[in-house]
Each structure stands twice: as structure tokens, then as C-alpha cells.
Length: 134
Image (cartoon, rainbow, N blue to C red; front, side, top):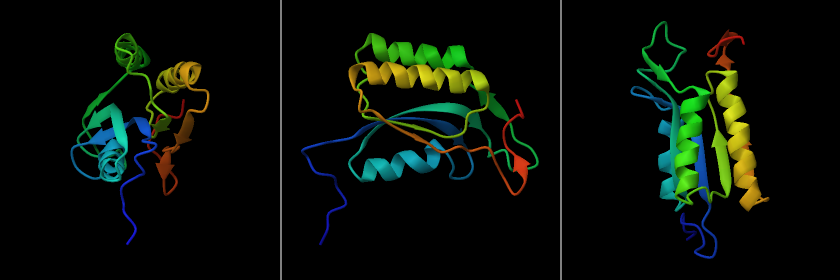
């Protein structure tokens, strides 16, 4: 039988920056738990906190802006916690968030040039955008 746990020789550490919804399984709500069950260490930042995903007729909640995201990254840096081997991103509501993600990736790669970046370019479905056109 093959174990679902990863080898103890190498434990990936993922920084996941994605959406979070109260209802439904998208973004960090669908990504964090499966990775953790595989033995992957996951730190996550919710780029948005919405009632449901934006494919519904309406939703409520709040989005991080670039400055707020960078404050969280700075907090991790100040405590020597930016040691991730992987960066995973999904839903980004604004160009400012995307620019901040690129800064975070550059920061990760200063200490680990082999940092792997995985981007799930969540932009829309069925001909409808989830993000502003900008």
C-alpha cells in the first residue's frame, strides 16, 4: 500500500495566497486541507473573505489590498517565517495584489532560488469574469 504521507526527508512548505469563502469550496478553502492531509506544511493568506464565490448573482465580504498583503508578508519576514519552498496563488482581485505576490516571490527566492511558483489564474468561468477587467 502506498502511503499518502510525504517522505520525511523533505517536507514542502507552501505559502498559499488565495480566496476564502464561507460557502463553497474554492481557493484556500479547497486547497489547504488536502495539502495538510498529505503532510505538507501550509501557511495561508486569504486574498478575500467572501460569503460565496463571485460566480453567484451577489456576494458580500472584503478584499485585501496590496498594502495589507505586504504587511502580512512583512510580519512573516520579521519572524524569519518566509521559508516556504512553494508559493501557490489563485484568485486575486486587483493588480496591486498581483504586484505584491511578485514581490513576495522575489523575497522567497532570495533565500531559496528553487522556490516553485504555482499560479491558478482564476479569472472567470463560462464567459463571465470573476475579477474586475483592470
